[in-house]
Image (cartoon, rainbow, N blue to C red; front, side, top):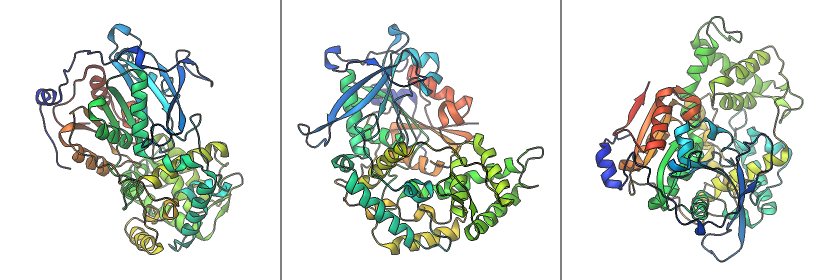
Length: 491
């Protein structure tokens, strides 16, 4: 990444932002057609309110059919200090932030909760907004089907067959909305949310895939942005023809597996796997290879066997958060003895159908993927040789290889044009959105952004797997507008 250094004074002058001044950014309340009422669900903060907003199905036809978006909010706790609205943009694609004002929003320091209405939403396609489903077979809801793990010998033929089957189901069962779920659609929906809230400008905290949505929104509507925090950052074009978002798992695993290996070889660890960290990697690879040849029955799981790819997918899942290392180690210990632990709990199939459909639609509608099996065969072969832990999955064919619709537009190119009001926060070791991809976003944003790199391990940096230095820097920016004058490293 090309490091960009600017003084806070120059940034403020260039963007018209006055740091430390609570300038109201709210338009007339008459511009806000939302009717807020009681939320359904359990465990919610009693202050959380919910509303429904109608937006165009197709933003290029604003007078055409409409869909509904479910919104939530907890009003700013100190009206005299209120600056505006902080939109919580979820990850995924397929995630929702509808309950986040009651959840992670309450981790925000008091100074931030005093300053903003906390706004959650279920992005288009996600229930309880107007929802979609592909009606997939139960087996195709397994993560080892959704993530395109090749066969044990590296063959991609089965993945191409799965891609065609899933794409046909989505085309048959998904309805017209499936064609209009994309990152650009989400960005336009956010601007409709801003208008409905009566805000001239909106602040946002986007996490994981939400960083791409936030960056695209800031690119398309730069003058409608206030303070933008992008946390655990995607490559700025995560679904380009090179499929950079999926390919990131190669480096993400390589960045994070040594941390797991160090933990798994620590004396006194009840789940210790080896005497030294250097022994853990070959131990894992040997076990995955054995499970490729000799799967272990796993009743109640999907699929109902513990094979090499299930082990690899579990490893990928559990590297998201160091708190999950024990679960991965227990699985390895059991598998080495020829057994499997109790099957992990899974959301209901209906929930998985919805999340899977939204994820597939977003990724496949954002950019075209190659149709030729040969492209994936070559990529898998190269990836397996260089990155054995991920066994070729990050360059393989998923449902987008057979998607029935071509993208209606090119992916938005993120640039440095616009106000200098973006703060990136990024853990140094993040399996899902590795530092290398975050640096691409930082470089693309140029003078618009400053990045806080945190010496920490895990996905989701701010108020989760980061550290006190990174958290304080982000909180200060949200509460006061004060942002570092240059990129910083938080030890």
